Amino acid sequence: MNLSEKIITLRKQKHWSQEELAEKLNVSRQAVSKWENASSIPDLDKIILLSEIFGVSVDDLIKEDTEEVLSFSDTENIKNDASTRFVSMDEASSFLQMKAKTAKPLSLAIAMLVICPVPLILLGGLSEYHLISWSDNMAGGIGVVILLFLVLINVAIIIYIGMLLKKYEYLETEDLTLPYGITETVEQKKIAFDNTHRICTVAGVSLCIFSPIPLLTAAAFSSPDIIYIFCVGILLLLVACAVYLFVWSGTIHGSYNMLLQTDDYTKKKKAENKRNSSIGAIYWCLITAIYLGVSLFTNAWHRTWIIWACAGVLWAALCGILNLLQKN
Image (cartoon, rainbow, N blue to C red):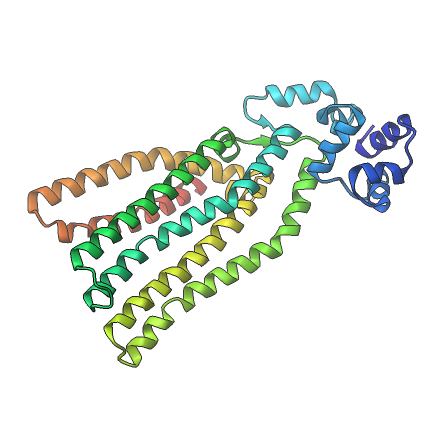
């Protein structure tokens, strides 16, 4: 007995019509009819609501009773398979809800980290050009205090959200097995969100490209120096808006990819990430040691920062070489 048949059976046991069930679920009768005809699958939240209304567990509702498809023993074998992690309906639903709930505050916190230098830049410029009555030291001190306060608040938000999502880390690293109906439901959600994700990506890229235009325009017209300071603030503000769009849409889109094991979360990618994380820990410790050693020996701290830029490019090349070697 599959999901559609169970909905019919349980509805009839309650002596409800399709209209009555639709009213309890706050959906149309046509939606219930499609579920019972197996022409569509309910969303995760509706499946959870169905289980509550019918008084059965979510797993019992979505689990196939036919041995040919998936028997109880098969499900237990999946759960006990050391190579895969079985994700229940409740786990998948709570994960998607948590990602959707934390996407906006996480995006805002990261975007604010881009904006946080703006008060320091503006106060310093206004003080230097005597547009405010503060001394340079006072303007700089207040600007630094505001910067550190913004960093403190937003880093705390990012850490807190990371702690909330820590219990779902296995979705990024382990091979997953989803129960019947979950894959189709998540795919439908992903398809519905794809257009929003594309719009956010295009808008974010456009903002990044547009962001230096005010500064370049000011330079072209030989504007006063104070105008450059305001243009830098506008540049950072536009970049922050782009970052917000990238992180928000990427967080939600990525949550679907995690469950479906697509894009950056395929089994192959997960294996590569595990390998690269182990090598990366050693690599970046060596780079740090080299940076400190060279800087202390030469006392050229103003030049040795270039080590980090070179190390970043070298790391990308190293990952590419490792991937080629694995393919061969």
